[in-house]
Structures are given as structure tokens and as C-alpha cells.
Image (cartoon, rainbow over all chains, first blue to last red; front, side, top):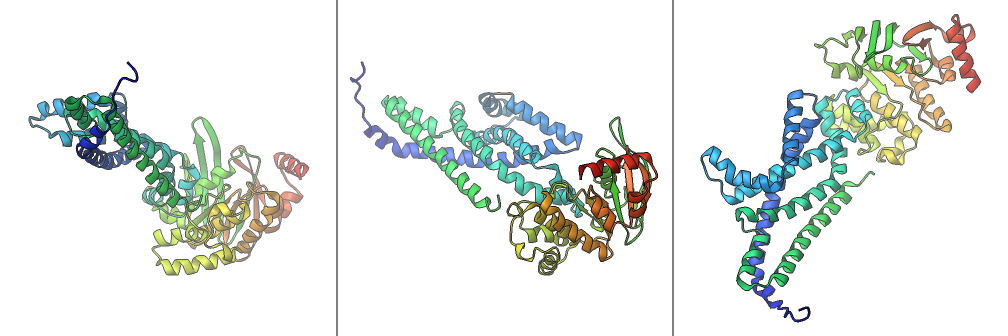
Length: 223
Length: 243
């Protein structure tokens, strides 16, 4: 009955070191996953704006196949499926980073493509008209402007990816959600522990928001 | 300086240029007028290959622009372009806009490029705006920075694509003044404009285009004073009516 339940928040304190280990792993997976994912995303995003039909289709195939399938299935495929095809085991942590990287890369690619295409055509023309090569114009003119426009949607994606790491419980990586499950399996304190886990995710995502807002402000010198 | 022979340009089924022949001599100021959609801007954009010609020959300073072996980036430094919408780089200061080409394309040391940049900004009357970003400039000031940016590459010819059409009326004069100074200094210029006063005063030759063809070309006195073609007359009549 409501009101009868004895809250015991001391369990949170007791399990805090274990949860912190989970936080550490969550940060690690998110950081490396997004680092690789950002590179993948820039490459695929540029591929999508490229006039080379091979690059363009390759990037399109990657983006569509990742966006069109659930992350959970991608994780399972990388961890349980790929090893069978390759004949070697993949460590859970590597599989976790790979899953976040490949998944976020597809969404980041669309962010990159959209931002680049949002820069007025005249900017490229002005760059080319003073003798810059296409690459130079991309580098010095289009990219700096596009990057600024990427930051808000990138922040969104970073937060989504961080929360997505909780799905990695299915392959037994000891990130924050997994640690919470493990603690509850012992003390049955679902309310207190899940609340603590939720607050820890919130702290992490708020940190990302804050950092990106700072970056945005720093870049916002002209407009 | 510029030789154009039988230039055709189509966008899909739409033929915008239907065989244009044009010769611009060094130091000459050629002004192209005509109703919108007549192909004036496209003609200009074919000169530095911002548009690919469908057929025909375009030669700038001896380089065949449409030849795949031609270094088009080199040609573009010889033919500076000023756009209707300015197209300044908004993330760079006025000075950085001007020095980007010299530093990255001409490989001039930054210090030297900045010295030249300051001189050019002074020339267009914006010596005090070097550290200012484009969004703090008026339209006329933006266009003058854009002119300085093109001049920074020491081009042999300047192409102006309706440089005053996006400006408030009271700002047109300051841009035209800069262009007049350039013309007086002997710059070779091809100007697409609706400013008939400018054409009359500065042009060595005025070209009237309509429906993708050059209808008439002659000195401003003749073309404005005694146009030979009916289409020229009716266009000039309409323009006068607007003024």
C-alpha cells in the first residue's frame, strides 16, 4: 500500500562506488563511440554531399541501413553475429564502442550534410571566384560556417547516444544501467537505485548541454 | 582580354544563351544591359566558369576557360567577380575576407597580404572597417569589401554581376564611385547592371541583350541616343518609365 513502503536511501550511498564505476564506463563508451562516430559522420556526411556517385551511394547505404534498424539489433549483431562470420570473439567493450560509433555516425552524417547544404550557394561561388579549389573553399569557407550550425543538433545526438549506452546491458557491459541492475539483484531496492541511476544520467547529459553551449558561445564571435 | 565565340548555354531544355560573340579589349569598360532573364548574368558567369558553357569558346587572358587542361583557379584569379548578393564570408573580418585569396591562392606571406589588404580597404573607403565582421556593415560597405576582396588577387579584368541591385537606393552611389575609380585607373571591366547612368557615364561600349542574344552594341551615346533596334528602344523606354 502507498505510504507503507520504507524508503532507504542509505543503499544508494552504499552502492555509490559501484554506480560510479558504471558512470566511468558509460562516459568511456560514449566518448570513444562519439569520437569515432563523429569521424564516420563527417566522412559519410561529406560523401552525401559529394558529386561522386560511388561515394554518394556508399554513404547513403550506410546512413539508411543504420537509421532503418534498431540499435538493439545492431548491438546484438556486432557482438553475437559478427564474431561468427569473422571467426573471432569481440570483447564486449569494443563491441559497445563500435555499436555507438556506427549508430551515431549515421545520424551525425545527416547533421553534417544538412548543415553544409544550408550554407548559401554564393559562399562556395565566392570562394571559387577568388581562385580557391573546391577543397580549400570547403575547408576555409563552408566548414567553419556549417560547423557552427551543427552544434545544436550535434548536442542532441550526443545526449541520445549517451542514453543509448544503457541498451548495452544486453551484451553485459558493466555501464551504469548494468551496475544498477546488479545492485538491485542483491538488495531489491529498485526505487532508490533506479532513481539514483536516472539522476546520474541526468547529470551527464546536462554536462554535455553545458559544454556545447559554451562551445557555441565561443564560436559566436561574428553572428 | 576576353574573347567569346558562339557561346551557347542551356539549363535543361531552356536555352539561356543562343550564340553570343563578344570581344573585350584590355582597359575597356563594357556594360551589359537588358531585361531580366535575357542571359546577362549567365554570360558573365560563363566567363569565369561558374557556369559550364554548353558550347562555344571563352578565352580570358589567353586561357581557354572550357579547356580541361586550363587551371581554372588561375583564370579565376585573373578575372575577379563581384556578386549581386556580395557573398562576403560572414565568419571573417573585412580584412580576412580580403586577405584569404592572396594568402591561400597566391601564397603571399600573411604580413604582406595584410598590408595590401589595408591599402585596398582604404582604396574603397573602408580603412577603419578592417576588423569589422560583415554583419556590422551596410550593404554598400559590404559590396565595397567584396570589390576589395576581388582586387586583392590583382586581377586583369573585373566582372560585376548586378553589383548594386541588392542595395538600398541611397547606398548605390558609393559602390558606383568605387567602380568609376577603377575604370579611370584603366581596369578592364565587364559590368551587368540596371544603372543606366553608370553605363552612360563610364562605359566604352554598351551591349543590349535580349532572349539570350546580343541585340545591339555600340557607344553609350549611340545606344542611348539613337538605338537602332526596336527591342532596344522599347527596353530603354520601359527603363526610363521606371526612373
